[in-house]
Length: 501
Figure (cartoon, rainbow, N blue to C red):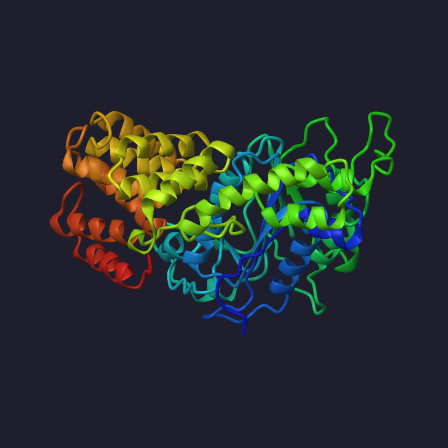
């Protein structure tokens, strides 16, 4: 049984080397998160989602996407995958999330189901499932377009056994209709209010059709989804109708090749293979790509540039080595390390150099800031964290906020700390909400307000933070910020005991 959280990051370069060709536009920065949940612990397993996710990931990689793949994920692993994806792709032109597995609608809101969900009652859903709104917020930050593809409208057996509260509470088949932001498309395998067929082959009918048309060159995105709809309708004898929500602009978007303004396919054959590959990898921070490039194309006109870039990256990798971070681990832009096991001063210097060379890669500034803190160079830590903040990294926002809150390395500034925490909270970081709750609980920079503290602790707790769960339980026990509730206090204490982070 395949279990746990597996992440694979693959670049378009590998496809170039193997096939000496790539149909994607190398100038486009494309990122994707692909999740497949099939091996459910408390309901019947689904046979196809892991196959569907694996095949979609491979196809997207061939189209030039940098892909993170997560199979059979629990609630905590699902949250971590989304957090890492959001931190990784701040500058992406196209962000895509694909999900295959169980989904459910409750009172008009759509939820994706991790493999460890029990869903004994409808009120458990926010603590055991992932809201579609969270995914929509993540992809909406794409410069050009955010895409969510959900092969998740299967008839969920957990819904039949769920206890309904007085609040929700309808639990319906399929998904509810959505109204995404102007730059977001949401594609359902089955129209709202209906369910999708899992299928008896390797792939579901929807994903099978999607795979076929993703591999069709020069197919505009809107037409691609219409062709997928027609295929699924034919395959299922009109029992399943896919549907797309959102609207596209007049600009054509192509996932597999582009077209010119005349309508003819853009020609890249006139460029040499090494020229196309160089365009694809020139901004990468993976030294292995440049080593492979030099080995395959020793006489390239970009040979000198590749060698210079490789030397820069080797210098940057010293930061990763000294702070125990893998430069290939794009999903882990933040790494908590034991500074006792490294030389923090040397690591600080190496990470400082790396952050200057790669200002758009926040992990160098973040790790350098932590090393500076370890040697109590708080002024330098603030400067390094600010670079991470400028790159849009939530962990850097929180780290700089804590220094502003404590007054280390500069003036104590609760307003700035609160602003940084709110900025990180907008990126979905649970620690940010925890720290906001702490400010209100203790009256630091704001009037003491237990109701606000309860609000922020509950938000953080729902995102999986153990400390927030305990703090929220304490407020319920004492009746601070709202009604006293021993039942709610007990619930959050128990939740904290079973949460790993």
